[in-house]
Length: 112
Length: 113
Image (cartoon, rainbow over all chains, first blue to last red; front, side, top):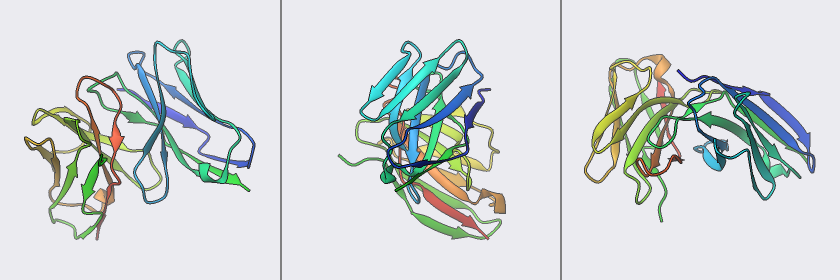
């Protein structure tokens, strides 16, 4: 089955700096890659996603890149703010109607 | 438009007991997936329901079972609870085979003593 590895497990940055979280996947049939943000005591919230026919996607301060050949994808957050502090999860699936396989998570701490 | 809702928010059970968790999907969504999230880990897929049938199942024992109702809401049942079943149980809904995006509810925190 699919295996998703996520690094780093913890990341501490100063407010205003950029943060990068990287994930690798094992199943070349995976074609959908969402990123979720989970705050304490809450469920995961979708923040951005990318499909395998696209190499990069941006939404304001958040961007995701995908390298299908290398089977890895990354989340980039620019101009970080204290409210960006949370646990971030990457995931992979084979598309509509299929399960999500999650990475282990990255705890991002943005210091004011 | 209400998002995914789950009940109860918290639950405490003892070993050997049975538990039922409930989920109402986002409006317009007909597919419900259940995930188990142990403390400090990513969610693990349990199973998915579509058209009132289990469509996919993850690597969980038969003690975990579910149901989907005609209004698309769903239940997760766990029998013979073990201490290791303590976790956050998440429900996610999606619009069937139309779109891949899954939206999560707030979860039910289950503690087994």
